[in-house]
Image (cartoon, rainbow, N blue to C red; front, top):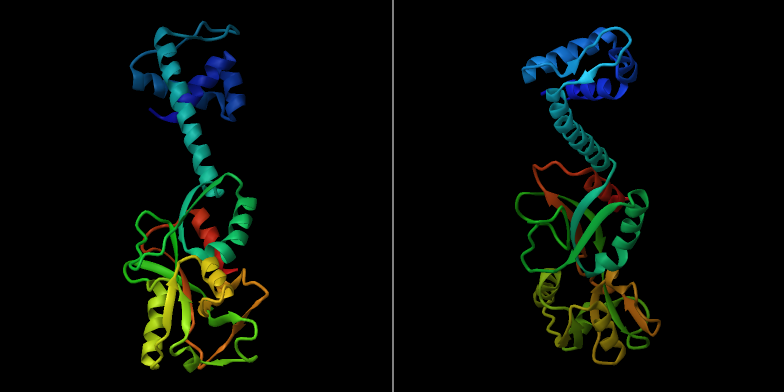
Length: 282
């Protein structure tokens, strides 16, 4: 059945005449008659009794059956159209994989802006830092490095490494990288970009004494404050660095970690995901 024919049936039933139904729908009266005739051909019988003259038309028993089910179909079609329009306007759900530094520094402003524009958006965040990242089940994924596989990705920023130490531990200015040799250090677990940093230490002949590892950036800073050791952290991890700690440049500097935002390749993004990427870039 053609939804237009059902809409015409509904209009004629509500208005009582073909003429008033035509005015309501913006059709000519002959067009209404043609659509009713087409519907009657489809269902195999008359849907209206036509008494003639000024008297209103009446639904036949067959017409009542068709109208009852037709209104259900029209309501579903209207609901589908509404859902599509809301989806295009930025409603719906978006699943994003993130990690600690991005969650603390980048995402608050982005999510706040996204929800201000689309208050009915369903934003789901998951924070994991696996050694082998995967984008399955996610719309977008932040990661501190390029991802392999069938993904599209954009580099968000370089995140330089800084040496964090109690105030007065080192003179002002850059600290020689060799000062880390045999130094007590607090560090993150040797996964993701931390593993690359420790390889760089080894290549430079630097062997620090790592006395504590934690994935909690605040935990690293707290132990540095306590005097357990110094730490090398990316700049984004220092958003809550206490005043009694100093972040020094290293000489030579370690190559910065690279933060990427990735999404599955060869897949059409929802408008909400597209807007999220725009906001992150901005």
